[in-house]
Length: 254
Ligand code: NDP
Image (cartoon, rainbow, N blue to C red; front, side, top):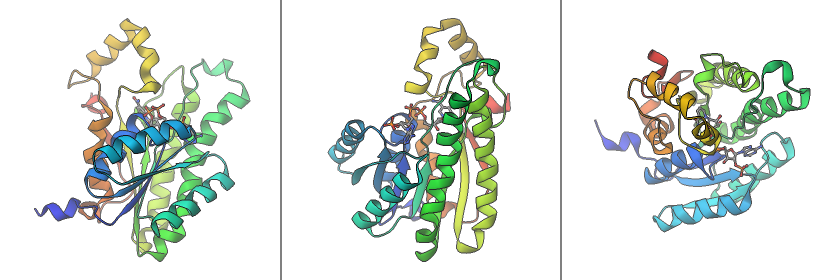
């Protein structure tokens, strides 16, 4: 199989939440495959650091500030990305948060915050970039789900609901935009060591119970997501759309 199938040279990828964790792991993978990267997140300082780390490795990246739940902010970010690079070929909807609480204790605000960022943010970024992908002859959208796209969880009901919905958004966009040569797929990361899961380190029994349920017997690192993202961003996956792909050390198979 030719390696050019996975070559992203000349492509431009917007990675929301790309300034750390899984987003940066994916951004690094896409950049190493040849893409220019737009790191799009709220914390400008953290995004600049991420860009510098990519540039240090000889990779091409630009930091743009975005609040993914805000239409105007998303429009502004996409406009600036187009101004800088002229086109957007790949979108990774990775920005996400969680609020930990028993469902009966969620305020409506807490519930909506998670839905607005994880679900609405993915919709808004996809909708904003769609016409530009269409005009460019196609594109790739990668949504980031979770194991809670498949399973429930007692203390992150809003997160699980949002990630379940991300899967149905993925399938719906895939069907809607298939004729425009835009492939839309989802990655479902397993348990990955990032800021989001750092609090579990304070709960050694829980952490050990999770690890014991992972067939590969280890948590994932952000870099573990890179290969699958490159596949879904490249022409190697041109006949793959609407799928949800766990990257989880076997967790979902168990
Ligand atoms: P991090 O907290 O490290 O990353 C979250 C990223 O999202 C940050 O870069 C943050 O940047 C950005 N972000 C959050 N809210 C917004 C917003 N409103 N607008 C723009 N950017 C935002 O966590 P992870 O790397 O773990 O999470 C990345 C994705 O992976 C999330 O969707 C998460 O749900 C998913 N995931 C994580 C798993 C894990 O085990 N870690 C497992 C399954 C899924 P900033 O604060 O600068 O805006």
